[in-house]
Length: 629
Image (cartoon, rainbow, N blue to C red):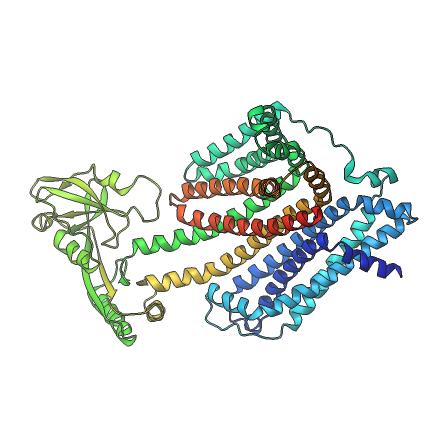
């Protein structure tokens, strides 16, 4: 058997450990290859698609490539840690340090080559489906048809061959074989009772509580100033939480005899503190990486929701027209004829209303005052509540869903100001109505028709016309909006076309953020998998010994379930809490409730993690049972 054959067989013998490394690496290659398929797609190269999408994907590809380097490096270090005993045996049999380094180098090159080929193959297999998904998410007019991505294959293969080659050299160069006796003892060496500092444990709790409280307390623009200090404090608190506070809590539980001696708790707690201490850095890294993934995706999704929902709430009409002053009646009539013609061309039936908006001097403000009958005509168009103010009162109308402007709300300014009439009387605003009936977001008054004639001369007038579609699909509305934008730029407004434009611009960002977030999340799951199986041989010996003194299969399953659950969910639960706090802070920044969006994003990741846990648990318990037979 040659040395290369020996290295090849070594990979096959360690396939349990290498399979996770191989699959994670292959998935990373596949994601990078997918981005390469987009970047080198003929439709993109013709320059017909948004350049921002192309630039974003190029940057995302770079991020994934850099992250892949560190991810694969970490995976390799986990393998080497778990193979100390094997290296010791090889040295005892006469292998030199140089030969062991060469073996590690060849193994890594072999795995890297297979992962690269596998990732490209999987990417090709799912390329058509991914292109179809991207075509819809990116909201592009051109079709992303399937093609043979020769350039993408070459770039991916060369990029990851170089990556695996340099990692192999780096890992074999830094490999230290230590003393033979230490290697042979491997993980049998006593680690001693893990200790935790009370002061550092208290500091961890204070940092987390302080960081969370600050993030949840601040509002508006103050969130931006508090963001960096809060991130630093919470990150430090998370590290101390896993290295100190968790060990300290476990030690307290072990001292509680009623808990420690209850059923199989002794088995669970006996090595839980060792596991927490040993895996503290992994937990910390997984928690932070997962938090970044949750927060990034939640922020992008929440921001898109904030923009689109805000536009829908403020603009309840399908189409609206506003010349923003300065237009004479002839120009207004001509523009409205153009709008009606375009709407008719697209075969859309509509109901329409027009109104001359007039602003009057009220106190020190120029405020829109609307006649109740005019307001009710518009309200009837969109089935909103009609208003019937008495002759001695006025209603203040504002839109709470409108994008918040600096300064006090409209109701605060208008409610305390009386309206003077030309006959010397004054009418007082009596109530505030939340409504988007008229296209005015700064707040206005609605008064009785008889009072309206007593307001005097307006200081500003402007026309407003609105249409509500009766029978139209989204494509018709978007096409109509596009034509209106071309012919009446800045005067005509179409809700559906505006939302289409926003989603078109935001789609690539969300798509890229989702991809990177998934890569981070899968990598975090792989870290946990590596840690779980790094201790597998020790676990087998432990459970084999315990089974001889009467541990039943159901008790074994229960103990293993708890151990795996703690390993898998400790960092993820922390990351979910971090993510929930971060998204709540984002809600405070925009004064917009993101509960639904945050629940959807965090809930989706929690479900994925549960599914991942169930799969890993099944195979782990199966191997433990096989070892005990």
